[in-house]
Length: 86
Image (tube, rainbow, N blue to C red; front, side, top):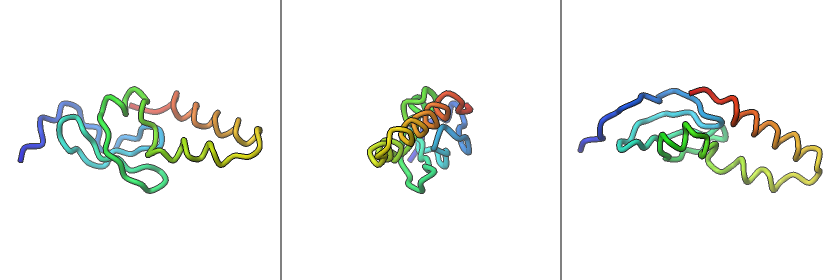
């Protein structure tokens, strides 16, 4: 079965919390999150920052009880979003 034409090699690149580990075809990539989970996403969402993690980043927001810690976490997520490398 053909996996489709690879137009841009993202293998090994890191986007926010996600590291690209395998091309699956049709612009779909298997990625490994910093938390250890694997997900499948499309190249467009990796490159434009729409997909930043497996979902763990959003889940962690709900775990913060004090406002100062929450603000520091948001700033870290924003920094990772704005400073990711393509």
